Image (tube, rainbow, N blue to C red):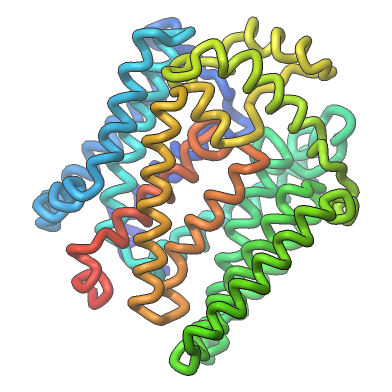
Length: 421
């Protein structure tokens, strides 16, 4: 491990990684207490403030403050999104919850932007390597050491692994991410003939085991999509200098045909994962939310982070869709933003995603290395992982943290400096 991770900088990074995942952990609650001054939510914000102060000290110490603010000026849309989150407290279903969640969003974004200008893509992979190693080890320990905690306790998913997280879908989604990190690093280690790659290979297999026993089609599909991405990136890296325009047209045409075949045979595709096109009831949930909840406040939403914190809302939705238990998320990150911040918030949010996708792919194409594709891989993961689960800012802030980090990592003025650091 890089020696810098054992310093004050490493300690701050560790604290931040825990905070970004905190509410998704089985040891914590999805809805921390915001009604009192000393509620768990405000204690959490206290740790965010301390982490923010620590990052500010590091920026000053390392003479990065000018670079930090310069890069922020090129990512001003992030500021608009955060401002909307705070303003939404004025019409939120729960003022205190929205203020808490908006503060969490603010600090996570400010700290993630420091990560983006401070670390290269290979270093971000190292961070995710160790994050994944600890997550997998603790998850397996919980499964075998405390089965009622480490596995799903209710039907029809009882027995499926959830590890340190509140739900199997969350475990599988995050495991799919760290799994592809190990795959990515293992490929590079083989090419460099680096024996460290054996550890990546071991953790890759370990993550496959966890992914399998999470019994989540969401994780299985993510696993396939992410591996296709990396394989395509690796092939392009090897042969891009021999490719001509007509080759891209052929690949594009075949991709469109393949996508059309998949979309026209969804019953067969989902049947391979023992699922139906209802996506385990998600389609009915989405339909109800769009028609009966989103439509109530179409343009402005119900307040950032507030809607699922209310028992009355969860029960109303449960009765509306006829589920046995209350839904606690929309099971779709885009609908989640629409519920919380309306069309205005979703528009700004999608603008951020589009900017991040464009810049990460430009970064990849300009560097023409496998490592250069890693920021684009993170964005690919974030976009697809949120189709059948809510990972943008509802049950955790970790994926949003990664989006901001890679966005700042590939912001143009400092690409040359960073790549040579």
